[in-house]
Each structure stands twice: as C-alpha cells, then as structure tokens.
Image (cartoon, rainbow, N blue to C red; front, side, top):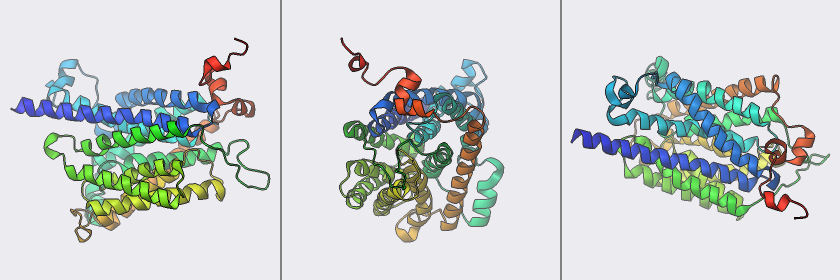
Length: 408
C-alpha cells in the first residue's frame, strides 16, 4: 500500500508538471499573437530555448541553491535509493514540476522585452536568473533557507510568509525583473511621436493571443492545485479559488477595458496570478474579489505604462505579473484571515513585508543581470535589425516562409 501511495503521488506530480510545461506553449502563443508579424518566429524560439536553458541551469545549479540537493549520483540513488531522494523517483518528478515554475521566469520576461532584444544576451540572462537569482529567493520562501521564515517572518511578524503557488516567488519576481530589463532596453522605434504621443501597435493575431491565454488558464490548474505535491494534501478549495479568481479577472477586465479582447484574455491571467499565493487558504468569494481587483489593475496600469509613463512593456508583463503578483501576495494576508472567511495562519504584516521584499529583490536582480549584459554584450538589436524584425535579423526566416518567396 505504501508503494501504491508513493506511485500515486509520482503520477500526480508528473501530471502537474506536464500541465505547467504546457503553459509554456501558452506563453509562446500569447506573445506570438501580441507582437508584430515580423517578430513571431522569435517569440516561439525564445520560449523554447529559454525552457531548455532553464532546465539545464536549474538541474546543475539552481535546484542545489534552493534545496541543497544535487543530482551527481548514480541512477539507483536518484530513483529512491539515497537519503535525499524519495522512493520511486518522487523527488525527480518534483524537480520536473519545480523546473517548469523556474522556466516561467524567462518566459514572463520574454513578453516585456519583445521586438527589440538581442537573442544570445537573453539566453545568458536566463541562465543567470534561473541558475542563481531565482532559486536563491525560492529557497528562502519555500525551503526556509537562512532561517528568515522562522526567525523573522514568524518570530517578528507573527506568521511565515505564505506564497502557496508563487504569486511572489514566480510571478512578481518575473514581472519585476522584466520591469528592470524593459527600462534598460528602452522604447521600440516608432512607439511614440516627437511630441510624446503614443502610436498604437495592434496585436498581429487575436486568435493566437486568445489561444495563448486559454492554454495558460488550463495549465494553471496544475500550477496551483498540484503544488500540494501529494494526493493526500490536494484540496478542491484550491481549484475553486483558482476558478473564481480567473472569472473575476475576466469580468473586471471586460468592464474596465471596455470590451477589448486583449484585456479580457489577459484579465483571466491577472486573476490567476493574484490568487496563487492564497489559493489554499482563501474563501472563494475572497478569491473572486482578488481576481477582480487584479483584472482591473492590469487594464489601468497597462494603459498608464504605454500612454503616460512611456514604459514600453510589450505584453504588459510588469502590470500583469509584477503588480498583480504583488497584489496577490498582500491579498493573501487579507482574504486568508479567518475574519474574511479564510483558513488563517497568515498575518497582513508578514504578507506585506514579504511581498515588497520579493519585488525589490527581483528589481535589483534585473538591474544587475541586464545592466551587466548591456555594458558587455549589449542587449538591443540595431535600428536596422529592429526595423527588419527579429525573425529575419536573428533566425533568418519569417513566420510564413513560403509567402516570402517572390516569383514562385
């Protein structure tokens, strides 16, 4: 029976890993549908290559930084014959699951820096972020490294910082690193008139954008629910909270965004980003409110970024992941309280401080990584390359190669 229980957990976590892995197709198609046609191939290639680099960096370095476990042992030990590895390869599928989370960081960043970023410097940034900067923070929050959870958050602020599925650890970290990268990269050519008025750049394909959103929404139920990591700990409350936050985000974006399809499809993601932190402790009504606030927040700040603040964040990943993630971390300290129908075990102060520290850490990490790359390799395409488009400039092929052949 013990072997059956362990095998069930292996299968459970593996399915979760596969669902989150599928979300990376969502990241890809969301970007493909948003960028101009001349940058669609680059969007697809970036997400796939970033996943490969992320897995490599996390396997050899990152997982050890976060959890202190290395994979430099024979297969018998890895499969469950050593003290650090659970039976039947359970530790290995947990690694796969956590890898898909880690790889989400560069996938998030990709959308912000689209259409003018060099390819190889972004690959180097991915390796540094997933190998060092992300797992350092991940280990503090999810593995209790350095005693900050016990000594500072619980000892001083009354409860451990609670981030069940990564509103801060994954989404806010990705969004705030992207914020720094976008600022260092600069504005796309032709984005604003001489007087500073924004020039609209419409999405290349609403259907591709919508497909990306749908894939992300479906995979998110693996992202949140299967963070429980075992069948005995899984809870239907997480699934319902995720669902309610998603629909709250959709409806708020529908209303505030004046029926804009881009806002509606991203509103679903805003709600899901925000609910991650407290999806295991909030009441479904609280989750609905959290998602609704996130959907409205995304629409408002996206408009401010592009029209007033001149932050050329192509997919709006800073408002979507950075700010909605920040809101989700703080919201877990409100709607997770028993007074608001939650399960308790959190404090507002712990959630506020932990969320702000996570965002600040990510912004600084982004400045370090992309600042160093800007001053060494360079991070931006030339003006001619940008006008040509990243597809031809970097990959030497367009999204529809047959149609590019003249006279045949």
